[in-house]
Image (cartoon, one colour):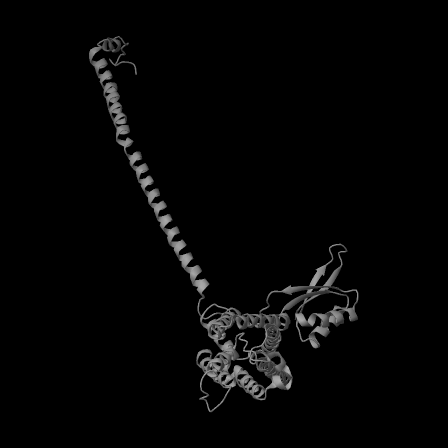
Length: 414
């Protein structure tokens, strides 16, 4: 049983890796086609490695063709930049990451060079967009919109294969590793910088604005293809046929479920509720299957912001504290110091007040002792002196003893 299970797991892993490689190759191919057919012929700088090739080609075309007599060096620059960035990723991000991006780092420049050298745009009749020495604004806008959308589709498909297209994505990963800046933010800043540099170098504002339009269409394509496909949905299912629905989710959709005991608030009936987390693209499939099994089932779909755990995105623990975290810790430390100083001042005030109270309590003690000692001694002397005076000064007591009757023995009565 254990051997069979291990075989199934290894087979699923192999199939998963093959699927990821296919997605990465397909995404890089679409991106290379968009760059070679739309963006490069129109000199549209929208970000990415191809923008570096366009800028270099702009200056190279104005001088002597010194590189082996080549008139166009776009593909050469793209290949060199891809190789340099991959080597940097090898030393900064590790071997595992570099091996994962190796497929994209080879596929994209190779397919781009082939399509660029064979003039894929001219083969498809797209040269009509760039007739003359300078293309019109409308033609450039069409090239920017379609080229950006295709480029975004290629990037999104590569992301769905748990990979990337290489190039400046490696720079974004490096920035994310050593800082708290997210990859999408750093990627946006890199693309924006390239567009700005292109506008300055070519001294053409229209080209820059079309490049911004191409970047926006690329972002929209990534949003609709990758982000929506990577969105999670929490599904709660109340059905009398929950066992059959659960079996379908386990076997056909390959998702785990949670069964919760519920009680109807109105009927008081005890029922089983299935809870499962699926991808956004799987909602239509599950909805149609539930309708087929139990049309009377009660189902709710709730969109989740993110899901972490086994089978989904793993938890990531940053190796170094982020900038916002250190900033917060500095504020907390400063607050703790101020609070401790305030507590010290309060304690000092309390000690001073207690010392004053003790001093005031000790001062009346001697004055209270004098009245207690002097009156106690003086009345005692008077009390002892008065009997002595009476015994000495009152002689009438002796005749009282002499007048008592005398017995025969000559003694007084006892």
